[in-house]
Length: 154
Image 1 (cartoon, rainbow, N blue to C red):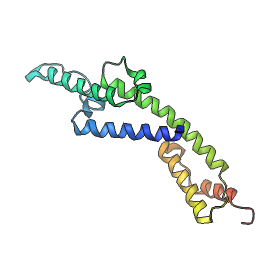
Image 2 (cartoon, rainbow, N blue to C red; image 1 turned 90 degrees about the horizontal axis):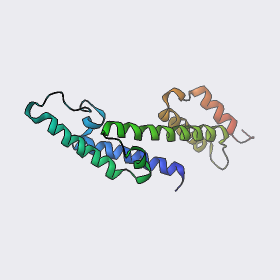
Image 3 (cartoon, rainbow, N blue to C red; image 1 turned 90 degrees about the vertical axis):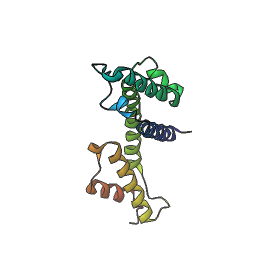
Image 4 (cartoon, helix red, strand yellow; image 1 turned 180 degrees about the horizontal axis):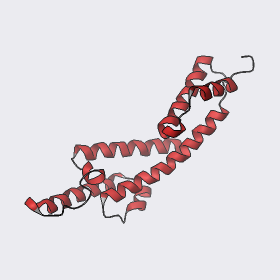
């Protein structure tokens, strides 16, 4: 499996984990308002939080692949573990963004029809914008990329 496919697989995994945590009412323990133990123990609030905290950490540790798990194995709070996971993926997104920018600069029409080539460039530009909204490629730059990549007869 190539690194691009691996990134997509991992990003899909984190989306799935987030959805599962939300469905189990544990997302607030990982990335919301319940990331710290309650200050008082009214109605056993501390014990309930500890159970939710433990369940969330268990889910993270049992669903994340071992190579990623090594990066947050020592974390005690799910929030810190999740932040570590996101930091790792943002580094991979930077690599993906660089790869997409490079592909855009070297993309050629080749055997594609003009509409197919335009859709390819537009899809690459859209993906760059999704990864980094500040790097979003505007219409003028997209036109230059398309014109540069067209066959010489055009």
